[in-house]
Amino acid sequence: MSDAILNIENVTMRFGGLTAVREVSMAVPRGSISGLIGPNGAGKTTVFNIITGFYTPTEGAVKFDGQDITGLAPHMVCRAGISRTFQNIRLFTNETVLENVMIGCHVRRKAGWWEAPLGLPRFKREEREIREKSVNLLETLGLARLADERSGGLPYGAQRKLEIARALATDPKFLLLDEPAAGMNPPETRELMAFIRDIREKFKITILLIEHDMKVVMGVCEHIWALDHGVKIAEGDPEAIQSDQKVIVAYLGEEYVKYAEN
Amino acid sequence: MNSRTRNTVLNCLALALLGAFIWWAEGNLDGYKIQVLNLIAVNAILALSLNLIYGFTGMFSLGHAGFMAIGAYTCAILILTPAQKEIMWILEPLIWPLSVIQTPFFVAVAAGGLLAALLGLLIAIPVLRLGGDYLGIATLGFAEIIRVVLTNLDFITNGALGIKGIPAYANLWWNYGWLLLTLFFIIRLVGSNFGNVLKAIRDDEIAAKNMGINTFFFKVVAFTVGAFFAGVGGALMGSLVSTIDPKMFAFTLTFNILMITVAGGLGSITGSLIGSVVITVLLEWLRIVENPLVIGSFEIPGIPGMRMVIFSLALILIILFRSEGIMGMREFSWNRLFGRFSRGGDGA
Ligand SMILES: Nc1ncnc2c1ncn2[C@@H]1O[C@H](COP(=O)(O)OP(=O)(O)OP(=O)(O)O)[C@@H](O)[C@H]1O
Ligand SMILES: [Mg+2]
Image (spheres, rainbow over the protein chains, first blue to last red):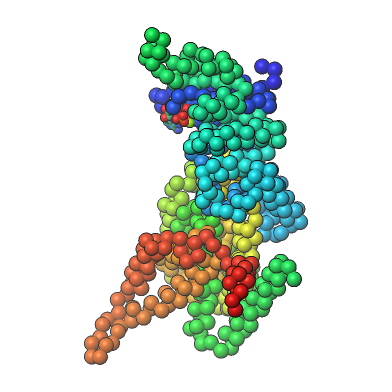
């Protein structure tokens, strides 16, 4: 692979007797929007958890931008430039929209916590910069009017968007989205697709997303991997995946495919 | 005048008002009322320190009595005169150099806080490394161990006899001075983006890690800073009541602080202040129920411990009916106060 931002090399993840991911390799092209698909329980979220340091793979390695990040703690993975959203939204619900984004800015700051009570100039300047950066980010993403709302009280679509905004606040090079369109109606989904393309351009990042909505996957992804029972069953561009026999079988079930063919 | 300068002016005014009040109280209030005012300040310091640990960072800790004990003993030993120490340590003489050291009150209180912080650090690191699920139990155990150690280290603590005649330096000025220092420190910390980081850990630790926050580090920091101010509170408390012994630092003490923090509102600095006023006064007032009650010719004997029963019932009621406490997570702010006035003031 000439220019991959992320290389997953022969990764296996076992939980006791259950093998959630089996010898999966992926090379995510730099600057792309890519997709990871598969039926429920295929191991997609597990792959995300391995990339972001929440799980250490039983076997195999993860390399990001030339650096081996296998087994790195989650906060160090974030510092390296990877950020994500969660399948079940995980916002800091008691905090405002603005504070959620400001928390995302923390990872890039230089001042130590003890400078806060002392009120040193460097600390004050940084506080101002974090606030400005967060306000600007909210404006760019069209969330500015919600800045002072408690994030837990936002409508569902706005919560999803805020989770992406918060992830972007960490200045990532690589963004992982776990089912960003889940629970959205068709107009919201269409808006989300434009949003995803938009942030790739604006922030010059690579995006890998998990999604069950095939309109989203086929509409925005340039490269797709398909998992089933923890095994990679196919890889390619949207057309190739759509016509792949294994993928069709995995999604529709063998019986149904036989039935449809007759 | 913009709202910033206005707030600075108002803060200075409030400080001046507090100063004037203390000056007036010293000259005009009786000793008992002054003692209650002192207790309010010390309880507020303790509640703020627990709020930092539990309310803002979400770590359920039951070790406050332990930290207070460390602070109280350290401070007491440092402010007693060498002559007093020679007379008082009868089981075993106080070891050198503690037997000859005597420091100013401020230094002694700060030393009490620092030693408590050091112990906080020593228990936080292993327990929080393990994930912190058992922090409540571990800190409770720690506080009990402290008590056992205090009872047995005769050559430092004078064992079960405790320390008497601690100089009563902790007057209104010192107690409210330390309260202001605590407030300043915690407001600055919690009001900054580091405060947001602590709240993030409380709200969702997994998401916080994902945001690049070293949650272990910040939990240790919050716990250690909280332990410091708990030690300060204990140091002041010792000088305030003038007698300390290991029994004084039993779980009830932690429970009282927890009650103040929860009743005021977890995650609200204003709540901790209001809570310490309300609960301290309530606890004093409830002493009545422990005294014998005479109605006509009947005399109902006082029931020792009744105060704590009522107190515990009150805690249960709070948890059932107003679990967020008096303030919830809200804070008092001049801006909000004036915002409300300017909006609501149209008709007036
Ligand atoms: N921490 C864990 N311990 C044990 N088993 C786990 C753990 N995490 C995931 N699994 C199992 O691994 C398998 C894959 O789960 P995963 O969440 O990765 O699926 P998924 O592809 O994201 O599915 P969905 O589309 O439903 O989100 C499941 O059988 C799940 O129960
Ligand atoms: Mg999943």
